[in-house]
Length: 356
Ligand code: AOF
Ligand code: ZN
Image (cartoon, rainbow, N blue to C red; front, top):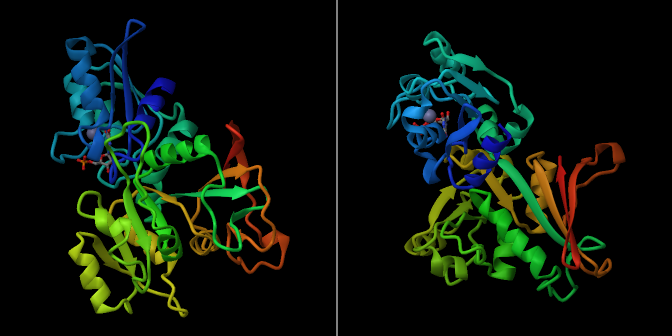
């Protein structure tokens, strides 16, 4: 199962709206088939592993990170494929919460005489599958907030200089983080100030995350890097009802996709409405790369799951821009308290990974 989980991790960021699942088929102590969910969500992991195992699958054990599916989609259910191949035993980590499956996959296997063991490696699978689980059970995507700050939590000097606070190793790692998410999200302030292109320019990857800007009044202009590249790599703009018609038209002409969402009393996009809209579109894992206003809004609304904090050994002081805008807290007890999962040195900088 540990190996199946590593296979599943390979598909993270590439399989939405589907989960990335891993499958290992073992017979007589040897691995005879391995598979993981392919880009776009199909073929499913079991189909790939079974194809590799061939006739050897008869009498074998399949380890799958998620309950095999039981529904007829574009292809017949994986539970049926495992049965047809003569697999003797199936070990799974999680029950699939998708209402088309939810227990039916396990039941189908048992009804056909396959021995089923559930609940193996559940904690690891819950992390790899977190985006899909959250989308299906809560209608929201899993959100990782990425912050690259000085030691005193600043992201720019008083004059707005921000390139670069962290070194090349940390920035390369940040690109790796993009690769494991379906989409990269920024607020309009960051889009306007940095003119980012939000692509992955490392690791020779062909796959790129979707690029999303939360921009209530469509302040970011289509002559930006995002606008100029929207034909080749998807850009989605989430805007409010008050976004000017001219800006909508100009953006639509670039090939970007416009999604109107509700705004709050001050005209800001309601972060919960925005993220549930994105989950509704099938997104499971979103990486928020700032700025401080969006980060604070997401934290304040309880929408952030993970924090990836890159810190450089540099001090800017209180006249610099803080990584997080106001949270409006008076009491420590109300402050979000995060749990440290991992720390790492990246060249001169550190990375710490936290769960909220
Ligand atoms: C599996 N193995 O590798 C994955 C599964 O739209 P479809 O037909 O591809 O079905 C998507 C659903 O299948 C998805 O919502 C989830 O329940 C399950 N995903 N199941 O047996 C896989 N990716
Ligand atoms: Zn399947």
